[in-house]
Amino acid sequence: MGFGSRIPDWVEPAIEGNLSKVRKMEPSLVDSEIIVLSASGMNIDQAEEALLELEVPEDYLVYETFWVRQAAPSDKPYIAVAIYRRK
Image (tube, one colour):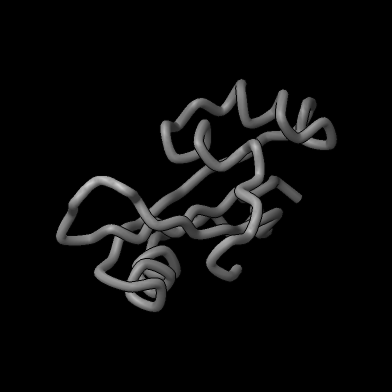
């Protein structure tokens, strides 16, 4: 991702943990079993590393990832988020 990239519609509901809304935003996921994980960090690298440290069941594959920077002041303003889809 780069600064100024368009944020996909699924990112906000994914960060909020709203799986049904994520499925609606991504039509290919409507009938899929998914897991959404997110992690925060002081910078992009730290957020992505924290995300990679989270455990995902072996029968799930990465479907999509993205990162954003929160506008509100925070000690960890970057959020990495990923959708995992069951094989």
